[in-house]
Each structure stands twice: as structure tokens, then as C-alpha cells.
Length: 355
Image (cartoon, rainbow, N blue to C red; front, top):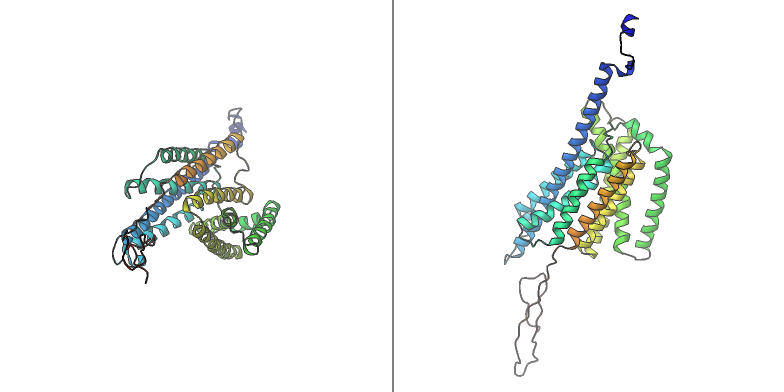
């Protein structure tokens, strides 16, 4: 009783030094996990931007040769593929340490890095709009990191199962399935292959991919820490969902790239993907549950700045317009003259006369 009475009047059992040290240690571990996840995501996105430019450089260099080898026989191209694999692995691991609502918007780092590398090493022109777009994207990224929800939670199989049967997610899943079926019907049966339709299909699949990727990465991380999670059925359900959603994303995204210019696909896909991923993180993992109103507002503002920056960088990149050359033969006696012979745009020769 005397020891209890000797405590200061304003200090309760919950505020004892031992307990406060434990809370501080837990907060410190959570903060370290968040920082580690951010570093993994930024590094992974930067490696992806290097990979894309290496592959682009390989195609440009091979196109300048008289008898080019197939690109898949180039060591430089395979170096790009390897870097992309490492970058994607870094992004995958980042979901196990940081909120999905933060990792998804950080994908703008790949766009910024790709633009910077193309200017420095591929000698592409730098426009004022690129500088403005890069500044906006970097500012948005800073706001995202600063005001992101600090909820670096441990993802266990039991927690994923509980989230999976929550009424918020079940309602969201029903609405998403209905929207996906309607868009797929419009695309397949009605033949509407508008860019928005294709990229909305990608975005709807992206929300499933983000949920499953974070679940799988989180459960693997917990297993590596000594808490076995691989014996639960939900782990393998999430693995199947992750593989299937990623595969169909690639399918629809490739179809969009075939029909539309990359300067249109990249910014629209980034906005749709990021919005879908943020919604998935909010609804499934409840990552903004205890966030302050100011943090939510500044996080949304950071997203908008990143969206605008990516649009400026992607849409204002200098389009390569090659002037179609022609050979002027003049008039040939006794022959029907062909004064302009247009070569194929993807050919290194000028073409030949028609027989």
C-alpha cells in the first residue's frame, strides 16, 4: 500500500514506465516496418523504370542493325527482364510491411524514374511540362508518405478470414462482380473496346490482386517470423486469387496497349489502378479506420497531385514522328511511273518497285 501511495497522483497503472516502454517499442517497430515497406516499394519501382528503359534501348539498338537478331537473344534485354522481376518482387514484399493504400500510389515513382532515365541516357528531349509533372508527382509522393495511415498490422490467416466475411467487403465484392460482368458483356458481346472499358476491367481485377498480394505477402512474412500461416486454407485461396487476377490484368492491359498509345494507357491505368487499390485497402483492411480528417484530406490531395503529375509526364512525352521518305524516279519512257514509294514504317529499307 505504501508503494502504491508513493506513486504520483497523475500516474496510473497503465502509465507505468514499463508499460509506456512497451507501447513505445511497439510503435517503433510499426514505424520501422512502414519505413521499410516504403523503401522496398520505391526501390522496386525505380528498378522497374530502369528495366523498361533497358528493354527500350535494346529494341532501338537492334532496329538500327542491318540484320538484327531477335530481341530475346540479347543479353541486355534479359538484364532488363531480370531487373523487372527484382522490382516486382520488391513491390510484392512491400505489401507485407506497409498499407496497401500507400504502396499502390507509390507506383508513380516508376513513371518519374522512367522519364528521368530516358532523358539522361536515351537522350530524349526534356519539356517544361515534364519538369512540372515530375515536381507535382514528387510533391504528391511526399504527401502520401507523410500523411499515410500508420497501420502496419500483422497479417495473419485468422485476420484475413475475418476481413473476408465482413459485411463491408461482401457488399463491395458483390458490386465489383456485377460491374465486372457488365463491362465484360459490353466488351465481348457488344464489341466496345474503348480504353476506359478495358482499363476499368484492369482496375477491378487490380483490387482483387492488391487484397490477395497483401494477404499472401503478410502471411509469408509472419511465417518467416516463426508464426506458421501456410497451413491455413485461406493462404492458398489468396494465392489462386493473386495469380488469376494478375494474369487477367496482363491480358486486358496488353489489349489496351495494342489498341491505344502508351501515352494514353499509362496515366489512365495508373489513376484507375491506384483508386481501386486504395478502395480495396480501405474496405478490406480498414486502413483509414482511425485516421484523422486532416490526414485523410492531405492523403487525397497527395494522390491528386501524383495523378496530375503522371498525366503531364506521360501525355507530353515527345512522340516520335518519322517523316515518310520517298524516292523520286521521275518519268520512265514506256513505263508507268511510280514517283513515290512509301516504305513500311517498321522497315529499315525504302521498299522496292512493284512488279
